[in-house]
Length: 323
View (spheres, rainbow, N blue to C red):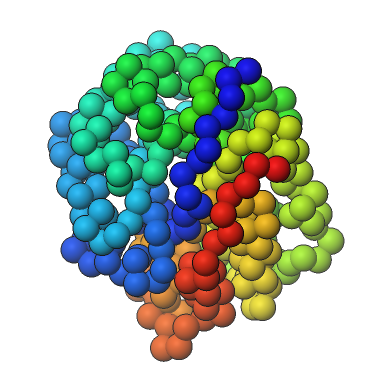
């Protein structure tokens, strides 16, 4: 087993949404120290996407933010399908994409916090396990990156999806500079709170309350905790969120519980998301919204969700320590 290197300092921040001239400055004003920058190959010509990515990295650095580069969807023709794992173009496209990224961003080593290899790797047919193809593929991607940049940190989500279950069977990657990652949306029926109905233009379903009879977050996330304790590796929660119209104080208490768990284990984290879909906004009111309603109104006073996240972002993190 390769000896794990000491990780970068703990960071906290946001996943990117709409990016304009104010985005990174405003993230920093909230107290963020990192932005997880979503890349969506296939929606923009690849050379244009690389140019935009580099420009965003420069702008984030100017605002005082570190950057996680997040391959948010697979660079294949149909990234929304589980069939990506049978797509013969996935592996070579992913390797080529990360070679391009590593080459383009190598001069920005002081700004890049990590390369998030693939967002939420999932195959419904293989649940509850992670896609068996992903770990050996990820090792090849890491090898390609290392040929260009031997020291950049790699962020690896074992899956399935953004869940924690893959940590149960996971062997660490054969590289000493890997940060292991998961996303937290448990329990989904609580954190989503009629999100599908909102997207479909339907009325809000009855509120789901938390904690109710749901398992504790400690129990749900135990596989990741055990993995960290066994292998002495850093962990990063790349996404967590709760719909802004979730009942209060439940929503803020759930956010506080997630953040407290991250802080107690020395996990870096990024809230999903900053000025993306209004359901996750910390700046808007708490009223239910559905298509094709007008955009929600900005909150006249900060919500307790916003106050909870801002307080966490502006408090000093404890230094990372090996368990």
